[in-house]
Amino acid sequence: MNMQQSNDWDMIASLFADNKEDSNHSLPDLKDEDRQLLGIMKSIRLDCDYDEASRIKNEVQEKTYHKMFNNKDNSGSGNNRNPYIILFSIAASIAVLLSISNIYIYRMSKHTEEISPVIFSSPNAVSHVILPDSSAVTLNTGSTLTYETNYNKNLRKVRLEGEAFFDVRPNAGKAFIVSTDRVEVTVLGTVFNISAYPENGEIITSLISGSVQLDNREAEPICHLQPGQSAVYDKETAEIKIDYYEPEYAIGWMTGKLLFRKKTFSDICKALEKKFNCSIEVKNEELHKKLFTGKFLSGETLPEILSIMQINIPFRYKTENNHITIY
Image 1 (cartoon, rainbow, N blue to C red):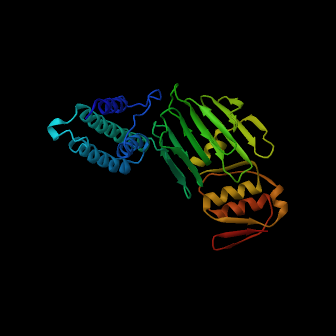
Image 2 (image 1 turned 60 degrees about the horizontal axis):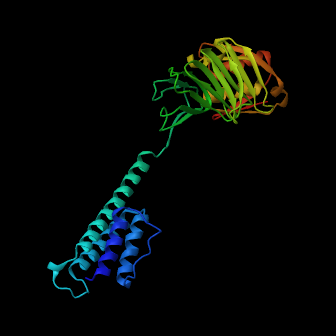
Image 3 (image 1 turned 180 degrees about the vertical axis):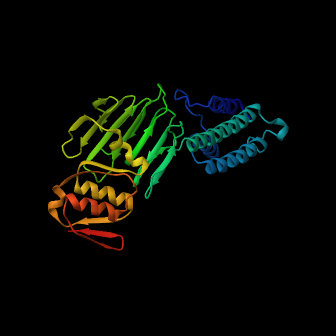
């Protein structure tokens, strides 16, 4: 191999050995075969497919060794191999191995960082969930709680559809956030109840202990609650009302109680549908305007509850399979 060829290979070997491209260098006047090999080497460093990189690696090795042992400069047998060609071969192999290693590490890290949702549903009964940070959640009937697999990594965030009682494990460094369709409740460690059924016109947050902050969907603070207070968010007007509540009315559902205070007939029917896994159709429009206050504490059946309600709000109803029509 002549001196010019040695310098050319020296330049190329240096470029690949440093694992970088120097735009200040002009490429040597290579033969077509050599330029093709150089193009393959460059593509390795950009390729992000492991199988393709492996194929190219084998092709490069084969061509590189072919150059090492079958030089076309007629300089003799393999015993006269130029050290720059060997250097280029070594640099090429290292470049390929580094490329494939980086691809593998990237794929593994991407795989381990994949985030997926964890969903708990409580369609027909009250259920209990322990979150990864040991916070405890009790889900009311017809409720769904969702969190992602990176929960408790940087923050603790769950999404609620329905109603749930939260007993949050304190962690001053990681806020606990409950997201609903209209508001978010942020705490560090506290006990509270949220009722956020999608079909209901209100989202009710009742604080038992600690403190909570309510934010809207734009992360703007709405209000802070103190123990014994509840915040009623009106979905239609986006207004919020803060008042004191009786704990029995907020969390009585956890022990199977049904308690209503100045609730509309429609809201009561929705609660009965969830508790008794039925459908209720109200055809009497006047009933929708009525308000009802009552307590059902002893595991009354649905017919018993309807009979008690008929004393204060006259109506008729019929039952067909699992469907109730109220007139």
